[in-house]
Each structure stands twice: as structure tokens, then as C-alpha cells.
Image (cartoon, rainbow, N blue to C red):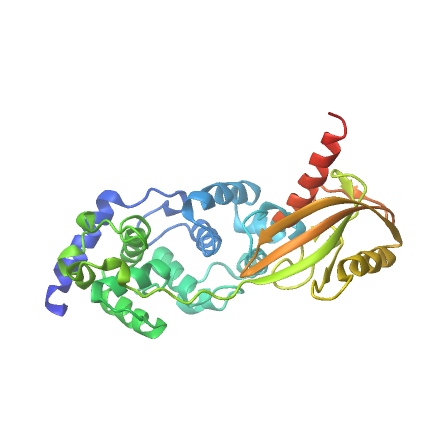
Length: 342
């Protein structure tokens, strides 16, 4: 393929120049993208599809139009603006990194990006190529799929993918090349229905020749989904409720209804968890409100939600950064309250 490399590069970049996605964070000259917009977008899209991420991105940029605004904001406001995006460690790291950038300026090389909180090799490569035109090849899920099919490699390891990406990277247009490979994977070389007839790399693609492009890469083994059960209590109303601040990597910094996990294999564990939770809150358990379920990072979280009285004073929930699970629980309580008056 090395002899065909100039033609392959030219074909993909010509396709990208014609059909690359018009995205708001791609403002500015090629290789000199706005670093703040590009950074927020790269972090947000790590776990979010572009179609959904557009709305989250616009909301976040409206709340914090500059890195200084983000650095100066309280963490609670940042988490509130991030609501619904999930993986809230990303928002906490954005906030921490913004405070570093506000003092030191934006990084001027790959190593500077990599040194920021929450920035790994992929993000550092993307941002150094997009904002500094540095010759760094990205390695994400789209890139992995495109390169695995290009070479008909069923088991592409991270090291193999990075080596292939480095070899193909166009040194004259590294930022555009990275965006082109990612766009190709997202819009043409898709997981289930690749559009091989529209692919600019089809003349060089070994998976297309095999007539089984979806066999590359081979499917990954799915991790076992862990089921987590808990009781949660609503003290107050869906608008004014007792909230507690979450801890841990997933939801740390967010607020939500008081909750207590339990082991469903133990007899009467749910009832005991409810009693223990209310005892901690100095509250009295009331009627069950129903069940809510939410998928979260290879976990399926199931809450049994109860009303309760007493306990700490309720607060206004509208300004608090809440997880989707808590929003579901509050919506459940609101639906039950509405049903009592219809």
C-alpha cells in the first residue's frame, strides 16, 4: 500500500473537502481551530454521538462562552450545564483544566495538552493536530474500524491501530486527515451497514474485497452488566426536595435524592435499606412511588422510590445539577402527584 499512499491520501482528503461534516467546533482555518471550542467538543463527544452532542455543546458554550468563564464558574454550575451528558468526571476535569489554561494559556504542543486534567493520548493528538497542525494521528473507535477494514484485520490492537494511523497520516494536513478518517467512520464506514460504494478508500480496502466488511473488526466481547438495586426517598415535592451530594467517579459533585443500596438476594433487604436510610435522615418512610431504571457504564441501576416525611429541610431542585436517574425519580413522583388530582 505504501506505493499507493499519495493516491489514498488524496482520495480521502478530496472526499472530506466535498463531504466533511459542517460542525460548529470546526470554525477557523484548517489546523488552527479555536482551541476552546475544539477542546469542549472533543471531551463531550468521547461518550456522546454527534447528533445528540450538538445540543449539549451549544448549551455548554452558551453557559461558558470562553475558557475564562468556565474557569471562574462554580463547579455546581458546570455540572448543571453538563446535565444529561453523563460521565461527569469529564465536566470536573474540564473545570480543573480551564483553571490551568486561564493562568497559563492554551497548550502549544501535544505534551501540553496531555498534561491537562482529563486529557489522554487521543484527545491530545486530536487537539494538537486540529489547533496546532501538529502531525499526531488519532486513534478512536471510528479510526479503529476504518483501518481494520482497510487491512482486513479482525483483531486490531491499540498498538496496531496507532501504528497504522501514524503511517497513513498526511503530514501536510494532519488536522484535516484526522477529521476525515473520523468522518468516514461515522458516516460511511459504519459498524453495521457500511456504504462501500460511496467510500473513497474502496480501491484499497481489503475488507471490501472479502465481501464481508462487517467481519472487520471482529465484535468485542460485551462486558457483563452489573445490576445495582437501591431504595431512594422523596422528602418534600418534586420541586422542593431533600437532596444529598453524590460522591465517586461517576456522579461525584452532582446532587440527588437520598438513596441506599441493598442486596436483593438477602431476605427483607429492601425494607431494611429503607428503614436504615430513613433512620439516617431522621425521617419516616411513607408510600411507595414506583420504580425507575437507568443504564450507567455497564451498570443497570434500579431504584425503588418511596415518599418520606420529616428529615432535613427540602431545597429547590431546579438549580441543582442532577443525574438522569434523579430526574426520572422526580418525574415518577410528579406523575403520581398529578394522577391524584385527575
